[in-house]
Length: 222
Image (cartoon, rainbow, N blue to C red; front, side, top):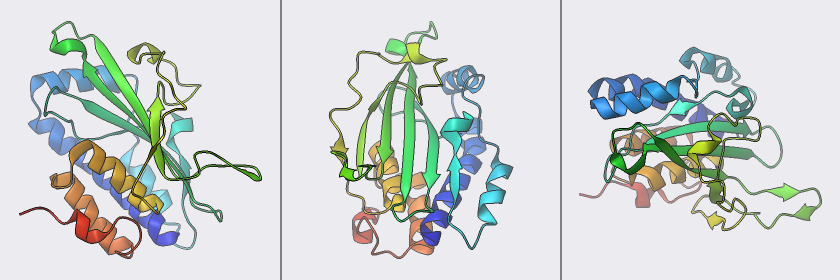
C-alpha cells in the first residue's frame, strides 16, 4: 500500500497548494464564504505533510478528522457557489486499508446576501468490517453525514439534522484507496476538470494504472 499512500499524500498536498491560486482568482462571494469558514474549519498546514512523506518504508497513518484539520477544495460554481471542505482519516498499515474522506459542501442559502450558510455532507469510504461479521457496507461507498464527527459540532446547524446517515450508501466504482479519492473528486467536478486531471496524472505516476478505475475512462474528452 506504499504507492497508494504516496498518491494520497501527494494529491492532498496538491489540493493544499492550489488553494492559494483559486482564492486569488475567486470572486468576492467565494472569498466572503471562505473567510467565514476558515475561523471554524482550520486548514491543515502544508508543511505537516512532510512528516508523512518521509515515511518511505511504511504506509501512512493520519487522522485529520480527530485533529479537526481540513483541506479546502476548489469551489464548485456551476449552479450556485459551493465550497467543499474535506477531512481525512487514513490508515494503510493493516491488511485491510482504511480511508474515510469526509466532505462538507457549504454554500450561502438561496444565494441571498444575508450570509446564512447551509451544508450537505458526505463520507466516501473503503469497505467496512465489524469484527468477524461482515458489515452491510463492505464495499467502496458514499453516504450522507451531518457533521465531520461526533466531537466536531460547532456547525451542526449548517446541516439538516433529519438526514438519514446510514441509508442509502451508494456503491462507488473504486477498488483501492487511491481510486476512492478519484471517485470523490469526479463526483464533485467531473472528469474533464483541470484539478481532476492534475490528480489523475499523479495516480498514473504513483500507482499502477490497472488498480481501481480504468485509466481509459479518465482520459479527458476531446
